View 1: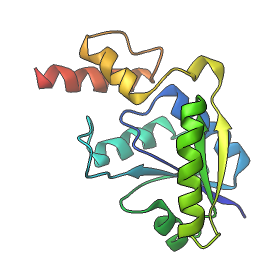
View 2 (view 1 turned 90 degrees about the horizontal axis):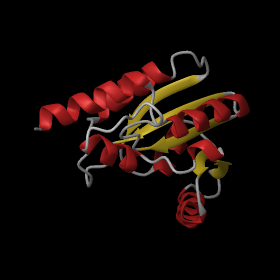
View 3 (view 1 turned 135 degrees about the vertical axis):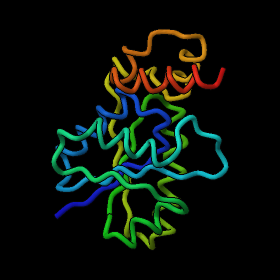
View 4 (view 1 turned 60 degrees about the vertical axis):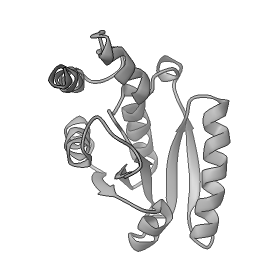
Length: 162
């Protein structure tokens, strides 16, 4: 049985993230979507909100579990029997960053954690959470980039910030 983890901040989850989640769920028996609780960042949504949003966005995918974690992904993976880290690549800069991260994870897991990369589909290749947040700052239409309910939640956050 193959068990993989797709870690990320997902602040907010984008259509690109969801495409990777769907494709990875078809590749692995079980997929854990790990929402990183990174105390060094100031996220738009709390980790609890991001978990809730991802559960709603992936409710139609039966072999998905959404969790939050902090610390090293390699440690979480080892503690939970996860042997594959899933990554989505949009461009060569993503590749460079993920290559280094995969090497750290491989060493930290004593060789028990492999990284599998999914190339982003062209229609999602430019979408990023930070780009979505920037568009939202100016009240732009987010529906091409995130699910409709996420667009509403993001706009509500920005409205409450004013």
